[in-house]
Image 1: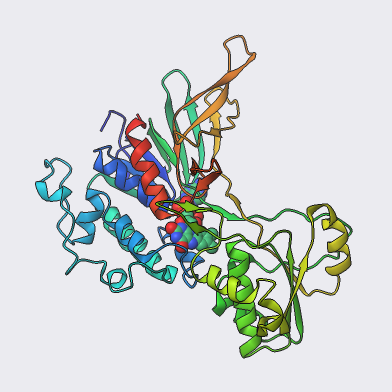
Image 2: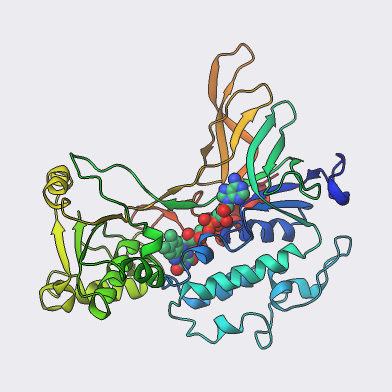
Length: 428
Ligand SMILES: Cc1cc2nc3c(=O)[nH]c(=O)nc-3n(C[C@H](O)[C@H](O)[C@H](O)COP(=O)(O)OP(=O)(O)OC[C@H]3O[C@@H](n4cnc5c(N)ncnc54)[C@H](O)[C@@H]3O)c2cc1C
């Protein structure tokens, strides 16, 4: 621990790192920092309940193999200790040899995942439970201090590179809460939510159907089943859009035959392709159950003879015709559902000690941030490294290039782990 005063009940006021967010990316970063003995770590999240994968996507079929979740949960020594249920090392104790030994797999805490076919996808509830188990274990690991709440602001002292972080806790009057902390490393694992941008054209004011809700068959049924005849317009042809179409179709074909779906799509379906040792469209193509279902029911040669076409009307169009198509086909719908991607959630407000706002620009190769630094005479300077600030996860992914030269952003548990393992040794 490096200097500083002390917080409530002896918790340090200065931390080697403050990690913002406890979804899969936050878990990844905390595990990697601990492995490198970067501690104490202050870890902040609204709920420590697994991030969005647990809160929103438990019923979603994974687009990655079950075996990758097992690999994730055993990829750093602090995780292996939690998984194998061994007592945690005290902060002062030298690591034992067993720190680096892979857990045997017989009696560890990954039995639910291990019993699945490791080469196939699974319901994301399995991945979410694994994240919850690691979160609970990390919370009890020496060197980790947790605080429920939101990091509202980070203030940079440009002369020292030190950050003062403000945490908005659920009950600020409770003196056990940590409301400020100092750190040299501020790590953003803040996540993303479904994109919601206005559509072009003179359109009726349709109520939105939340993408996250539609990814849960249980919630979808709860909302739609009590209604009379319902028409839903779904926009998009990505992985999430296909899963939503499948959920809606299954509801219509089982208990809600008065459900109609208009499916607006701008391009042919794109699938991930398994090449020799790599995957084409690894991060953007359809995979797993979504790919199989789309192939069988939505491809133009199969769609007309599939039962799906009794409920779904496909409206294909070119980007240039978008406005006209929306104006023509959206009126009459009861709900509009935009499955058009995910956008970063708002991050904490960042500023300098002399109150200049900081806009961080992410470096997708190194996992750090840059900012426009003002020169001493007040003129706008070039992009400079934003001291001690790093990011990972769906909001801050690695940029990768495949052997054909296609550029994608690498999103998924295994990819977060691979990236953070590579870049975090430089997070000084
Ligand atoms: C529909 C869908 C399916 C997916 N399927 C798979 C899959 O099969 N396999 C796979 O590997 N990946 C999958 N992913 C991708 C990815 O693994 C998940 O999106 C994952 O949840 C991203 O983790 P994260 O930690 O980056 O973000 P999140 O899970 O969103 O977690 C961010 C956390 O940070 C907290 N937070 C944000 N701001 C603050 C703040 N200021 N202060 C405190 N806390 C804050 C949030 O409350 C949240 O708990 C899928 C993604 C989606 C959308």
